[in-house]
Length: 498
Image (cartoon, rainbow, N blue to C red; front, side):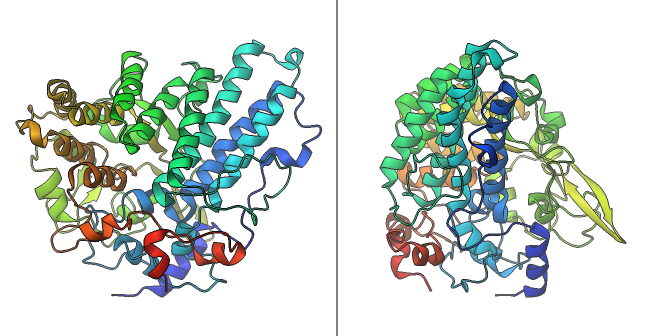
């Protein structure tokens, strides 16, 4: 395998995302004044908003959202070096490489550590414990509505963090402690995957009961949770548990609200600027104060969209998957407006082309200003179609599938009913290309239908036997185990770690 250590070292500096030997190194934002902080509505709003900032840090750390959700799938090619040794290993689903304990900046280490998400959980716990302390008289808005929404947001963030980790590692610690400083987890064990999912489900249901459809602030409509975000999360949790009857109920409640609407596919990439009509929950980074100097666009764009890269995109898309598995019809509006150089050896996805440039001395640096679109209407429509197909409700599944195809300018699907579940997963691959869903969709396809498509051509990445042994769950980094011997390694990887 090719090596690119010089670039990789530079990348580590550029990402500016560090880790340390403490299990949790992000201090909850409100902890600096725990005794006096919780006095006004403004304090409560600030504390709740900080949960999302901490969540963003976890999802960006080591390009976590895309390194887990897209990179180890059939949409990326192993034909070229990916601009860093660790990204090559992640892409190949070879997650066991040895990394020196001092190399906390390494992308693989950061992607094997779940501790980054506990800062958001701790902040949510602090919010749940302290929000009721704020006197109703200190609210400028209607107290009952606002305090319930704040509390609902805290339950949502905690549910989301647990679900996010459960899909990656299966079992992780369940933390209910309220702390005012860093969290000492040396006495925690990993809960079972089932218990973590049940905790996420419990919190998501509670969030739904507290949240209304309208956010506290219309400015933060999509980047702060509302009832729609809670329902979308519930639909995904139920689908992951293969509880498709309840997945259907949650998705239908969201769809029937008519709170969201589909964006035009002729302006498809505008969705990723954030705050589109179909956005349900997003991670904000579309302003100059939230933009990152190294994001997914760094690896998937090239000139003329990224003027600092005059060569090929650093992460090459798999042309076999792109042109023969997913986008077989060039009239697809998502091809016409979501890609460039489509029929060349180096096609690129344009979803993350929203950027600006800043100067540092003589160097010009891009700032990526696309939100992470976590849930959107098309995602939930296709998840509902998946639920219908699983339950043998083929007409309802086909109607939803064809609705999404129609938005893209395509005709109705003609696949047989027996193949409809896989066809929906395939459509999700097209509609949600490079949005952090592909790996988890392929896991569900493998579980439900025994179809394994993690690689393209002769690259299996995860074989059927490896899947049955649980390889789709990530290992935790050995550094976490050395800091806390109570942590057991993920089952498949216990004999694979180097």
